[in-house]
Amino acid sequence: MGIGGLGPTELLIIFFIVLLIFGGSKLPGLAKGLGTGIKEFKKAVNGKDEESKSKKEIPEADEEKK
Image (cartoon, rainbow, N blue to C red; front, top):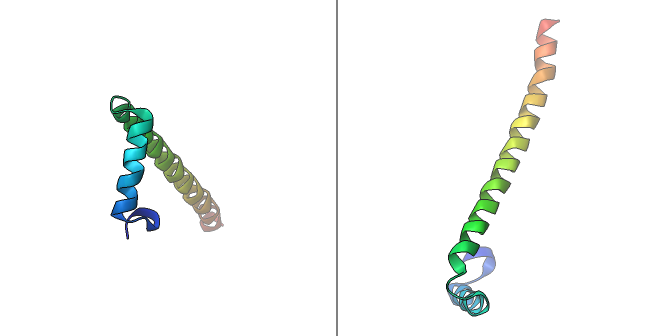
């Protein structure tokens, strides 16, 4: 099994369909845009994780002062 339950054959078929639809010259731009989108999504998720951790640490700091 490959990505998301798709095997290598299915992934190749999907790749060739995308190649036919968009053409070879547009694929690098699409891949770059997809990579940038994934990077921004991960950055946003990590920012939310850090934000929630800092919110959890604030009440603990207040309790230590008491």
